[in-house]
Length: 227
Ligand SMILES: O=C(O)COP(=O)(O)O
Ligand SMILES: [Mg+2]
Image 1 (cartoon, protein in one colour):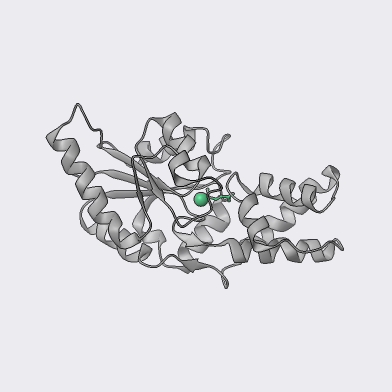
Image 2 (cartoon, helix red, strand yellow):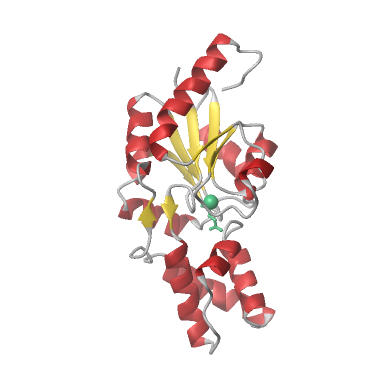
């Protein structure tokens, strides 16, 4: 059975926090402020670039009036910030295997669309995705369900799954009524058990089997288990 599988990006497919910290710290240095630590940076990721910059400002005592200017500079620098970013081990092979199994793949991230597409191209991942929805593609972003719904609609019909790492992703999947698969090595702030999820994995090599198992369970008991 061919499913629609939509993925989050930061903290799910890629470990991008070191590059995000580097971009933030370039701006903070220009503003005469102390750099963010990596844990601080990770704590600020998840609700899009605007919220990240607002949290960075608040943490380093920069005024709200600087928001628009800082955000524009942040997004501009973000587009080419790839050197410190790593694909999680096995993520590329898992996308390859899921595509080869006939599933249709999409991406739904709160990262702005331009840097999202840029990092996908950098890692040669763009070819896997039939649709890419960024944090600024629609008028609303996750945890609003609209971006995930738009990604799924673009992929056609069939069972749906959302794969992500964070509270935002779990809430988005719940709001869209889509089963959520939690990658536990990303940027979530709470315990995995506190995030509603249909299944969890800590190794990308396990995902194709997890998906196949869920689809088979749904086939055998369509009323008891969705997707
Ligand atoms: O840019 C962010 O804040 C988060 O990005 P993500 O939705 O891919 O985790
Ligand atoms: Mg994420």
